[in-house]
Picture 1 (cartoon, rainbow over the protein chains, first blue to last red):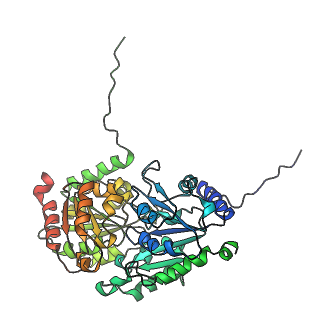
Picture 2 (cartoon, rainbow over the protein chains, first blue to last red; picture 1 turned 180 degrees about the horizontal axis):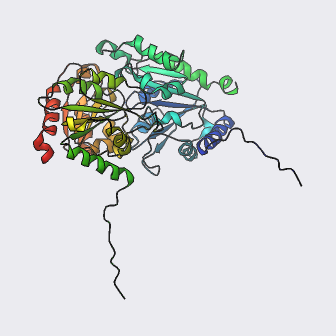
Picture 3 (cartoon, rainbow over the protein chains, first blue to last red; picture 1 turned 30 degrees about the horizontal axis):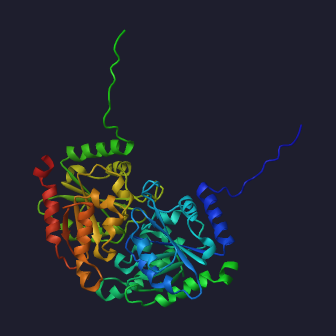
Length: 226
Length: 226
């Protein structure tokens, strides 16, 4: 008789997590910081990227642009003369409402990682499913527009909990809305106490400097090594 | 020898469509008009319902309220003293980003259909998946806020094509946005030529009368029989 040795696999990763880990290894091997940028439709992800990606001091930035259909946002960002790669989930991915690790894996074949310090992965506009799928990113950032109302953290808590930075966008509209910013921040702290937040306006440029600084810090070589 | 008669089933319904049809039969048996109301998060579905459901002349209205988590919107609508039933997709439905026919079927057990003329099914805030799942509704209406930008019909064409009425909400913000309404309407007509649209503001009440009239017509006994 011989003893059977039972190997206990403690962390069983599902397929998405396994592929996300492969993406992460590729990012790390190339010294690239990957940021997964999420929001509801029309919250201002692309506008906030247009504001900063052209002027990051010493940081070579690129974008992986997720959309259900079309390449409108990719075309806007390409005018910044940075590498932009489009993923259309409506073509070959069943019109998925989020990016997953495998879509990013396939798209990475066309991303010149060796030429980048920072890759922003702009997710599909959706407050539900994108929060459930890691794609290998180092950081998760979300944009929430003040036009969406104060209750969003309570209604979509997984998304607000998944992020380490919340960009509260369109604050130039505050004088024209029945929106209680203090209540929003209270709701935010209820679901994710103390999460970092920046008040910004892609339209007027208010707060954009702090957003640029955040990205620059995240993508600095010291941050990647840490 | 005998001939085998091959029956050709022309319309094979999937499970969702089969259940949607059962819901539809229940609506029809009770003379209830069902409206599936969809939008991105924070576009103003609940606010636009608050504006009209309390004052529909001779129409007994109820709401089936879909959310991932919480019952904030249901509580707002319950103050109108109409029957409101909550579906939380985060409880028992895996946090789904849309309502499907089966969720509605289960919730209908708690909806007093025999006491209603109109049931509004307020879907999860999402511009992708809700358009893919019929729930037995007679009409599909969507809300699109001008704060979301002009490009949304081009980016989420399935949603804009699925609807027979588009409520263009928050038009009180137009003076404060870089938003080209004519361009939005052109984009809308590109993906769904001639679709009915109403310009409204839940905040100021502008256009709300036309929205109330639309619902009243949709829920009138003649409309149900037609």
